[in-house]
Length: 84
Image 1 (cartoon, helix red, strand yellow):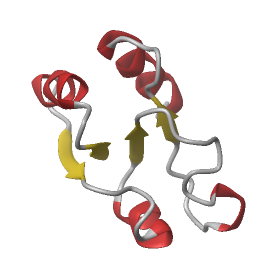
Image 2 (tube, rainbow, N blue to C red; image 1 turned 135 degrees about the vertical axis):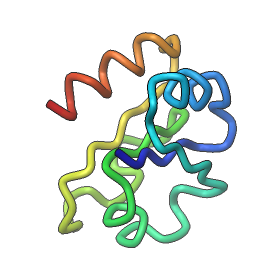
Image 3 (cartoon, rainbow, N blue to C red; image 1 turned 90 degrees about the vertical axis):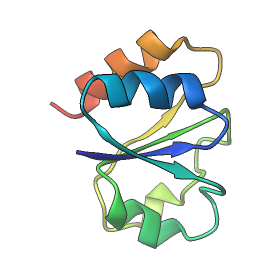
Image 4 (cartoon, helix red, strand yellow; image 1 turned 180 degrees about the horizontal axis):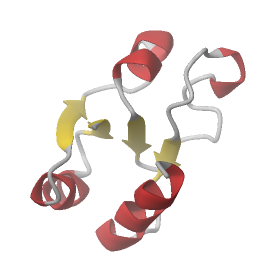
């Protein structure tokens, strides 16, 4: 699975890579909303607003996970639950 991770979340990126995810750093997850949604199976961001990627009008089902205030393990567990 391909996961987009905001550049500032290096600890989460490392954990996902250790668990065999294909991780791509995203410089600016807001830059190209619909393309990002189609490109990744999930996107992990650091504390942005709840509608960061315009989820109300995208065609993708890729979950967006807000990592603010969460440990890398908590984000990993949420990712696992949402990708089931």
